Length: 587
Image (cartoon, rainbow, N blue to C red):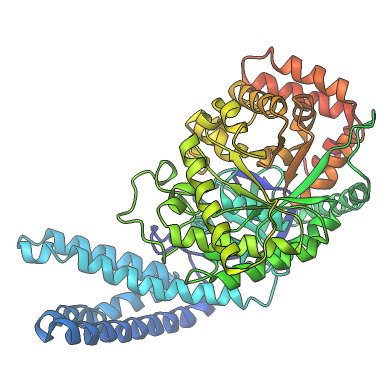
């Protein structure tokens, strides 16, 4: 038995066998396979080599047609390598004698081959390094792609183990089969974490080298509350965790009753609780969990799930479906937040950016790709006739950026009017406050928009200069930092002073320990992942606004995040002890 500790990002317990998915752009860890699986690994190797050769031949033909036979001849060396009997025997020998996966056999042999070439004195052989790397990635891509296809057709329950997952890969997971997610990389607010929480799949990220510690088929326990992955657990641990899982399910059943109740404090203040979604199909679950509106519709997942940009009509259909599903409830649509860790192949901003989180992403990318931006705005406006909709621009960092986005929206409106296309004239326009410059300029920005939505995930990252997906500094990423308290407080005050709507839609909204503080700071609207809603509504029903204001004032006297989080957890436990009892049944 071996226990790995990581970052808990989606609560719950999963007990199942591991399914490991490698990443072609990461070192392949050594993983052993049983004797009975060796022939299957050799067969996978042969299929990957044959498929790679076929792909190279197709590429050679294309190059030959475009620039001539001489230039296309560079592919002959690649084909000769993959068809070389000696190299193939080295691959197979590695797999059979060491009893390892085909992926590791290819990775290990090719890396050794590259080292051998570098030791040769002649420059022409040392320069073959790039060719060896290219061939390695090509064959590994075939093997890993085959594994991902197996994942798509999984016929049993499993815990998915990977270096990391893209947002589109996470969103496409079959929840009935994938019972947990464990990754080497990632942080509390990585998009894998957000989606796993939204889907209700227990997840632990930042496990460091979990992919090298577990093989497909090994029994695992994943504790999404305490950030633990237990590999090959003993029988007594399995029994203990199964009992804990039963208690958690019983607690969640009781908690589910809170979803049916209104979010009203003991002194009669009504709080609007919205849900964050990625797809229209999530709306039913959001309403079932007690949401009264959709406070954040992340539209970029329409793009991440497609090899080409969705057309205006395809987007229109998705937005219309969401509006109709809400049956008169408000839908806040965030325009494209692409870039950084959400990259699509059909948008080519140029060379890869050294620091994409500080680069051409989100509203900046849209303003540099006007046809893409205008198409989305047209689709939203056309769908708005179906019900109440608001448009929200992300990552606004200055007033001119906002005015430019509004001007483009105005031009799209004029085009629709001229063509006689109906749309809602009174549609509200707002922005996400998620960079410090916007928070500090909140008074100015409030004069330009109808509402604010505070996006604490990025706000924390940019304010504290902490990459939210960097495991090495994950302990520095916290919503309890005094600077975050001050920025949220000032944004709420600016919104209230200018009498515009203000909400908070970051992960902070769904964390119970922050509920009293947010209410005390004046927030009366929050949006969160659907599974978090019943717990937050239960806390709201047990407090008064006066109590929350006292908590907020007390927090303002602290100068460290440790003091703040300890105080907030203590106060929440006093208000509703069973929240932490239920969360700690696995402790």
